Image 1 (cartoon, rainbow, N blue to C red):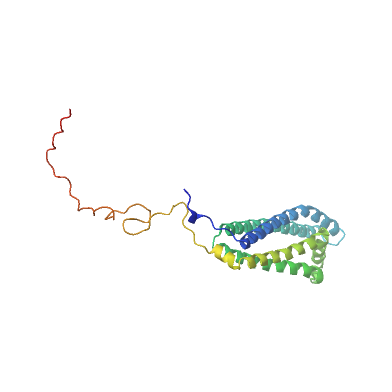
Image 2: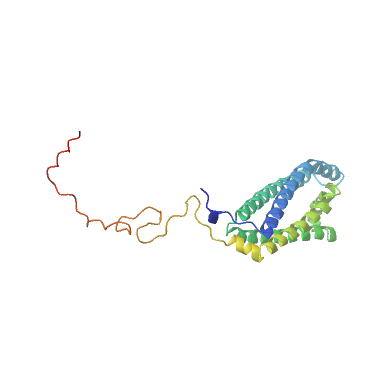
Length: 239
């Protein structure tokens, strides 16, 4: 038996659009993590080849190469974790859970901050190369070779991803502020799995079962007397 009042409310287009953007951003985060791992091997090889023409010792080269590999793996892990978080938020929004909206706003704020910082680092590396003291000149030269060891398309793609991340979080946060999203995420739903029962009050309980006590269709308990005890009359003879 179905109950029309228990039908799931229709999801507004604003919530569907926000969920779609979050899922697209999750796919982009996974693609970025995979791309990091794919280009890591060639980047390290090109870095070592370029570092062999400098005055850096083998230990310095190994240290910077290890730092390059570690940062690549860390970026990949963070990308996968970010994708899982975005998928979780998308599912919570799609289900209409009220706590999903403030959680999404918090993640969007952190994502905006990370995107702006990443874009600033990319622009700063190109506009003002790293400058260290004379004692650290070898390390500065090696770090300068790291940027050239990446593929030519790597820096522009990273900049584009940072801009897309900023815009995506802004779009999601803006969609969730609209009245249709607010009404959907703040709706009140009845507990699942329990059909609507009779109204609570005289003669009924909240679970729908009749309550013990007086009911409108019978005398109160205790007022009815049992039949008088005595010998039962013999049955009538039947022909």
